[in-house]
Image 1 (cartoon, one colour):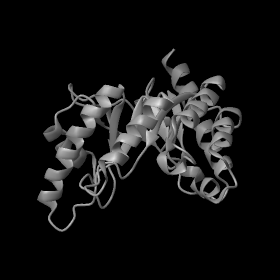
Image 2 (cartoon, one colour):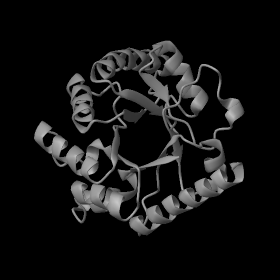
Image 3 (cartoon, one colour):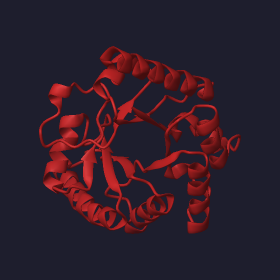
Image 4 (tube, rainbow, N blue to C red):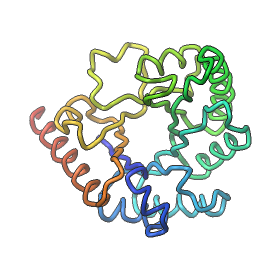
Amino acid sequence: MRIAVSSSTFRRPLAGGALTQLEWVERCASLLGADGVLADMADFPRTDGEYVAQLRKVAVDLGLVPFGIDAPGLLDPAATAAFRDEVVAVAAGFGAAVIRTVLPAPGEVPPATFVETVRAAKALARAAKGANVTLLVAAAPGTLGEDLAGVKHLLKDVDSAWLRAVPSALLEPAEIGAKDRYPAFIATPSDDPGAVAARRDGAWIILDLADAAEPWDAAAAAVRALRVAAAEHRLARA
């Protein structure tokens, strides 16, 4: 199991200026012992190539994988082509393996929004292929992808190997079909770490935490629980 910590946990200190993005990366390595990081576009103070390259270098120097970029509004019909190009460029400069997003809200005419989203996703998949980065779509309440089935329904229409779902780490192995490819899974502190370790041995885990009052303590406890569960799982299999 490899753990990538998302910056969602640290939204308040990052937005308020109490924590810089560079400090966040450093502490993910020194305090959490994470394997990688997933940085939200909203947390970048600058998106020029020089800054993004510096962020990547800091991560790599600390032994962290610059695993991904979060861009929740990437497939929204209102999103501009310029924003989409910017996200892909930042992901490429960061050396990200993935960009994570969610589907838009159904809107007043859900079928029309679905068609527009498929069109946007196809264009985005072509850009992602050019940058060698995989797009991950997470299920989210109030969107066209309320659950994994909803996400997969849209991805089937897009029909691109560069667009994948990113399900819960608690997904049962029996629910994974022969053609399913999941580059990563999402875990939260409320998930049973033993179940995550047993079902996702060797997989990338994106760790999402709610906006906690003490985010570093909450994140450290979650990472520690997953590490212990993974070690116990390996011993049980030995």
